Amino acid sequence: MFDAGTTPEDAGLVSLRDLTEADLEWVAQREIEIFGLSAWSPSLIREDFLHGFSRWRGVEVDGVLAGYAVYGFEGDAFHLMNLAIAPEARRRGLARVVMGDFLAEARRLSAPDAWLEGATTNAAALALYRDHGFEDVRVRPRYYQPEGLDALVMRLRLRD
Image 1 (spheres, rainbow, N blue to C red):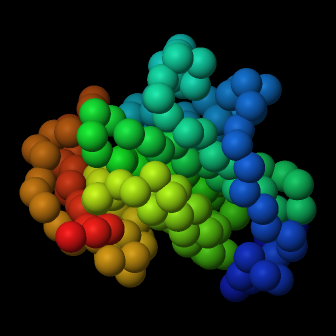
Image 2: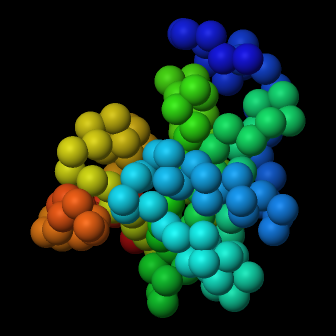
Image 3: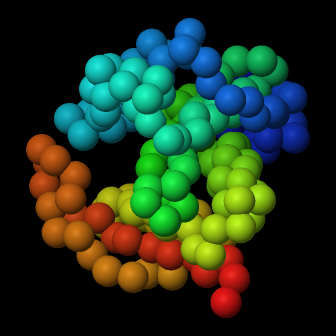
């Protein structure tokens, strides 16, 4: 389905949708594959999906899930809590599609800022966020556990 060097436009029909409870097992499997020891547990995924104040979004190519994101208000901050693209679907612009959706939702809800954090070791993610206008705010030492990786907190001002 995915060939090296393809973009969303030539990889097939790319669409976004809200995830359903039926998607949670797929998400849990991908969490482990992508994030290893830092993965959200299946119980945390289910609890947040069923009872949290988050929006769970999936990106599909030709009707097949290729990635997901979780975002919404945490207190008064609109926050990207998770963004993951399946390894076989990376480098096709899908994360950019998801980021556009995240920012459109933030603007639709009139959030003053959009917030996220990324591992300081994840150069590709940090470059994506900076390309969307996010600026470095601070480092949270050993934020990602159990690996003890530092997180870079980033913010995009959406209105003055």
